[in-house]
Image (cartoon, rainbow, N blue to C red; front, side, top):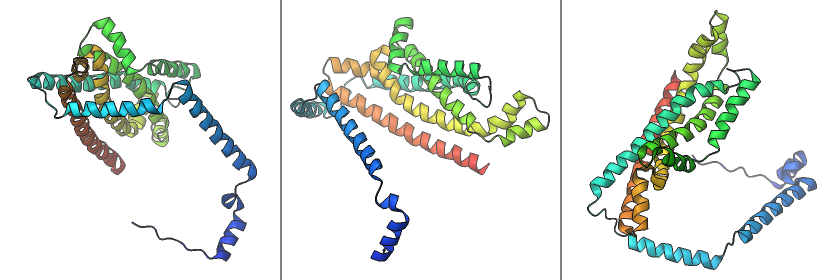
Length: 286
């Protein structure tokens, strides 16, 4: 729907400027602070580019080399390894699904333990939050490297890496969802003689479950992409084959694997978006 424009006369503009001078002409102090912030950010950006060796000529040659690689990738061709790649695609989906599910199962109780309106003890709340922060501070790829060393190569290491990272991230999101819920149903359960556990079961869970389900679907979609990345370090799935084909310069197979990943992500994104909207719609109607 188009927005109608409001045309003001000169007198009306003058009255508006007189009534709200801070909008028409900000104070000098505000303009100085804004200019100083912009100058500092520009200076930091310039220093960072200089310190890290940014070079326009190298950028131009890199783009030309990338264009050359794109020509080598055409047309995408799996050769005789299509069955192997389809099996790897299944591994990638399994890593994402099992890792997300495992992380969510562990994160669910931690989400309540980290919520201030469930655990009022500041020391217990602080300890749980710091555990989540510590685990969340390590990237999935680092967890994959650790688990490949611990349990060996293969999709099991990928599942553990995705589950560990998802546990901490979902735990934080779950706790924030619990803290943001309406307190009235909880108070209603307590006022009728319900125990704290019953207040959580009947006052909190019905409100928070649709939100948690929506977050879980989004993380499955994200982990489907991440499971490819962790596969590059030996944690199974498409990433393992992608890294191998790049090493042997089989660019047509590389482009086919990338195409498979793009289709996989697009399909998961479409399905999870529909499911999220359905869940949110039902929760609002309820």
